[in-house]
Length: 350
Figure 1 (cartoon, rainbow, N blue to C red):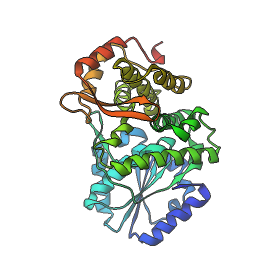
Figure 2: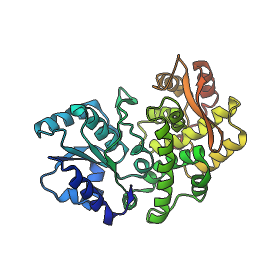
Figure 3: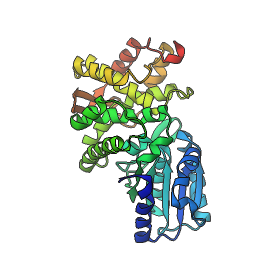
Figure 4: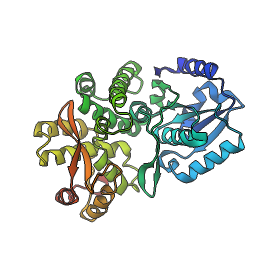
């Protein structure tokens, strides 16, 4: 559901009137509590329980899950209670996972507040937390009870946060082609252009829903949505101490590097590689890895949860709107590729 500020409270109230929860627990991050929660009527209801998380992936730790579950027990939360997650992808991942396993499942409403969470993280039923530096290694496939996307929340985001979500929009456009690709080629709209954003978000959701409806638990077709994410997560992991390199920048670069790998494997045509490059690098810094980071990055990727029989499984583009999943790349091939392109360093090292 895509709404504006003036209608989101009405939508939430409709759900609450139908469900009649005995308790409401609102999960927020530091930023979403400050910028977004005050715009919602649920913030003004004194009997609601507010649970606070740090911003970003710091929240996706098992220790926070344990603390949250303990707080639910203290507050006598039941299966008739409701969790409302207000925040970006990390908040939704955390709350969705915790809700899905507490008492074997209590309902959770998502109110995504970032572009990334509106076009990707909130849709599809994936929940997850990190463990020992491995992203989303613990999680469930559980749909939220409802999703309320307020495009006006985009005006609370800075340019970096918008571009973080725009990388997923580019990914969906490459996989889908058609109307969404036409929208992306026009460029990223201003945050106050609600009409443009409603159209873009709607097209993203429709595309992802179509994929997920055919393959909810990622046994086949849904693996296409991992495009850019294998090398992207590797880049994100080796540069985790650099606050300037966020998830979106990593995934945007992952789209390019995986397209280059696809080209070198004879799968992706050079024209597709050039299209990806034109969509990514006018707006994102080029991020790679140093020679010293080749082995750590290879080791990290060889432990990816998508791997099979000691090989990484990639989704690679054949054409715009056409891709293959389960493309196997051996450890030797991966090492060769990483070593060959190890001179590419992120901008802060230039």
